[in-house]
Length: 308
Image 1 (tube, rainbow, N blue to C red):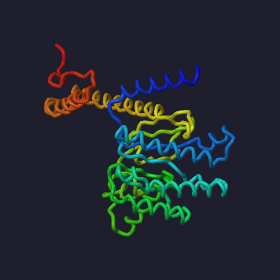
Image 2: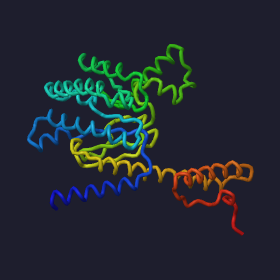
Image 3: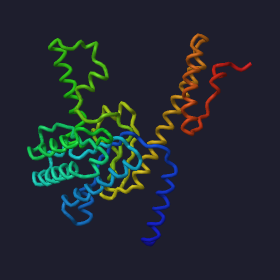
Image 4: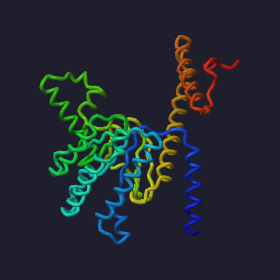
């Protein structure tokens, strides 16, 4: 297939995907994998791969804006990355520092009121990176239209362990009753950053694992996951649209599961509960109608009745 034909076919596929989409996730989280492998296959240094990946990150911000995504979290530097050779770490820190300051000064960031935050064990980062984090935080502190979270020195288990230790300390000091530990109490001890639960995780580079990324925010929300083979610098808008389609299919499946549970409830409960159960099923049907979706559900007025 010639380059021209391939581009035309890709453009057509992208338009078809756009027509299939009727909404988007509010919060997308991305594991930007494959930067170093991309560089190796191109005969370049690892730093070149990360800089190419930074360009994809800029495009991702545009794509999220087009689809009205409200929040984007990028897995930029994990706790495991501290095990890399010192020269690789320093190159990454240089790039992270430059991009944080560059993003914080961009006109479109301020036009679109993008709130930039970093999450993770930030005290483990070099002072120059922490200074850049503080700069981006100050420059965008008043914004709330779009949230951009940069996961740095981040590990999901470490986050949960830290929250657990803090709660245990409050209990030991008598400041917290164990019976009062609930979802809100745990979330109050997590890293400050994500404003909402994760709806969709995207991982590039071919590996099919979520690598300890946002376990509380993603797993608790049963987020959809999209794995794809392109390295992060090769990730295209059409790949993003495919990921959003996966999210929509996941949401449709989950809504149907909830509806089927409501139907099962209607068939199992006694007369005393039928009125409330029918109202629940009716709301499920009304929401589907409002969104232009079809669900194969019984009539809420007759559901629960037995056949003669």
